[in-house]
Image 1 (cartoon, one colour):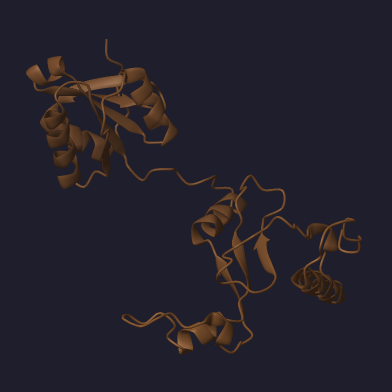
Image 2 (image 1 turned 180 degrees about the vertical axis):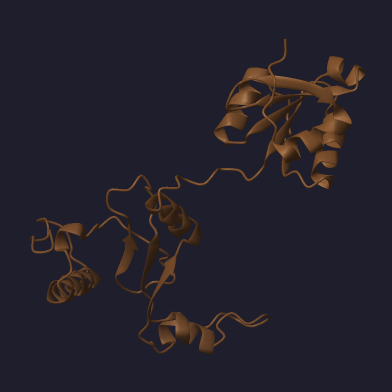
Length: 230
């Protein structure tokens, strides 16, 4: 589409010609460098930081990867250095007119470290990282304050613990915990609290074990295989 004529009846802004020229030059440089042009696309709808970028912007994606988001992005920003040098937005003073600041040719790129790390794990055959680092999630079926106390005791024992901030039906709560890939759910019901126990559900196997409240932290720390509750 770089070589197509502008649709009849539309005014063609000079900046469009400038941008098209930049893209044509970029593709020429890529071809000269031997870059695989079949993996390079010019997307006219791509936009990034209109107040920062002054020219071509770009995003990088991994081919044949389940990761849909970009792993890196950037572009040309000729005015940002001048804006810093002029201290354009000093407190108590009027903003400096950016059109009067001299241009300093600059181009940069930033990487998404979490996406890069995830792609490295996939390349090493380790699979995608868990969505939550928690080992357990406390589900307040009864009194919320009791669930908070139990979560606090687990955290004090070094167990990474989340707690559901709002009451949900048990089925929905377990579905949420499974989505976060948290290994264990700690079920805190009124009947169990009256007996001084909690139920721990193994999210992978679907089995549950019942134990005294003060034994839950040690059980979770040791990672014992739960015995199914009768």
